[in-house]
Length: 205
Image (cartoon, rainbow, N blue to C red; front, side):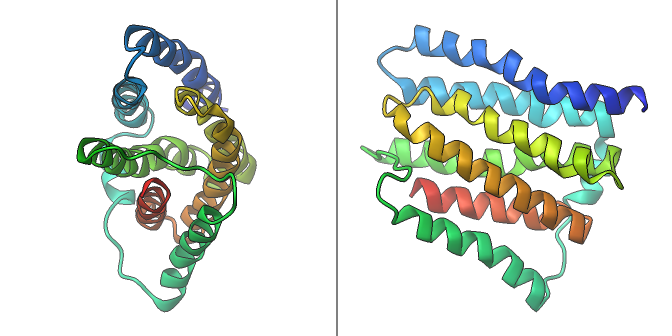
C-alpha cells in the first residue's frame, strides 16, 4: 500500500478521534444553544475533513473532475429517487429522527447543514477512497462507510433528544453504502452529492 492509502485508512478513525473533543468543547462553551455548537462543529469538520484532507490526499484537479455535473439518464434518475423515497418513508416511522424548527434561523441552519454535509462528506468519505482504492471494494466502500456511520454519533449526541442518535447512525450507514455504490457505478460524485443533499433536506424539514 502507498502512504496515501495508509493515511486514508487511518484517517477514517482520526476523524472521530479529532472531532469528538471539538464538539464536546463547543457544547461546553455553548450549553444553552446546542444548535449553534452543532453548526460550528460541522463548519470546523467541513474545513478540515471536507476540504483540507481531500485536497492533500487526492488533489484539487481530481476533486473538480469527480464533482462535475453529469447528464442524467432514466436509470440514474431512478437510482437517485430510490433513497429519497426511502428517506420520506423513514420520516413517517414512529420514533424516527425529528428536528425542532422554532424559527427561520434554525431552518436556515438545517438547510445549510444539508448542503454542507452533502457536498463535503461525499468528497471526504467517498471521493478520497474512490481515487485511492479504485478496485478494492472493501476500502473503497465498506471501510469508510462504517466510520461514516459512526461519525454521526458525534454531532448527533449534541441533540438533547439523543435517543435519535441510533436512528441517525443507521440512516447514515444506509446512505453511505448507497452513495458508495452510486459513485462506484457512475465513477463520479455528482449523483451521490445530489442524493445526499436532497436526502438531508428531506430529513431536516
